Image (cartoon, rainbow, N blue to C red; front, side, top):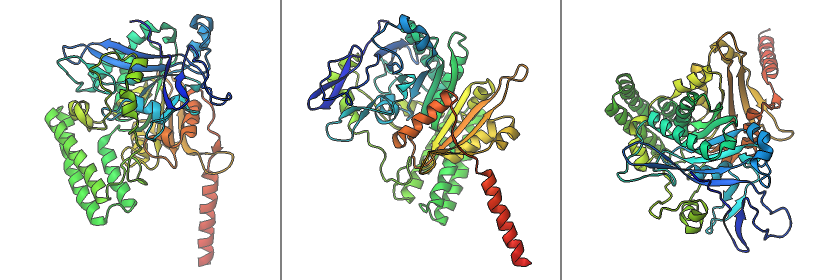
Length: 486
């Protein structure tokens, strides 16, 4: 597979024809502030087998870390490249292209919601100190496709096997990145993709898997659906009678799901997905169709300008998408990718996280607090159930992650245990981000980047343990109450 460099992409801005990568495109702006920092970028396809008899093609878009010098050959800075973490980023859906994460969340490029779809350089990109690959997977997502007869992935095992084959071929083409510490990251439905892929990678002794990071993950859907009903009621978006009716329906959904999981009954699992999706839609209808990903909004973050941009001939050519029959696909739990994964949709993935934690890999789970679909409470309850030793996790203090002035950046829990005999140590971090919806890097880009780097590089989350303050408040309340009776 030949290397597939990206030299530049359309900026859609009058007077600035392209945003350039390596080699540097002559600067067309005025002054240095608007000069994008040049990095190596590659985009193209890896060919993989499955899920059916026809060949499948997975699309990737890679950005080297800004800490590396693109004007020097990789061999000249081998140690720097190899010591830099390599992040895999996956959006969810199912069917959501990871290019959405690139342009709307944590990539080096940002697309505006204006009519032109103006492209600019992001100051908060995750590739400032890490290499990042944005993968469209499974096939049918983004630019990734399957030749005729079209067949789509129906389970996480097949998905993970195909992805690992693609990753091996990426490394074969770009061997300078194979020794980098590898982190599999994603959000939403990628809460299922990430652990499945990580466990598959863990079986490859020659790949340096270091950990996983998941934002607002769709991990244990049965719990997420229940929490959504409670959240909507607590927010005033459901009345008491509506809550009771939905709770009754939820019990039916849970029973069918448990029967399907117990017997590996695909038909029942698909029925559970119908019931679970029905519950979600009913909650939204009761609440006037609020945004499931941000309870404060009535519409989701807009990606309207992204599809025409990604479908433009100039962009396709720049990204080495040469098959004229391939159109960029983006869907959120709809379309052929979601239909094929219907039996997987409501299945519980939490035990995969337990396995990854027990194997000693670093794990970060973070959530935006206004997400009703995959928010804080369900993530916390999952961790409370799977992290062992339970008493050590339950005793871990919740730190208020502070900024020098203003409101908290987040709330952090961490458990780190040393290796004991043949048992690896545990390294689990949970972060709740205030004033954020489902896509945390879109709502809080600076905080999300700082959070990631603190976790990646073991930097401290500076802040305050409120425990002594809380104890003082409660002790005073007890004293005041006692004085009232004295």
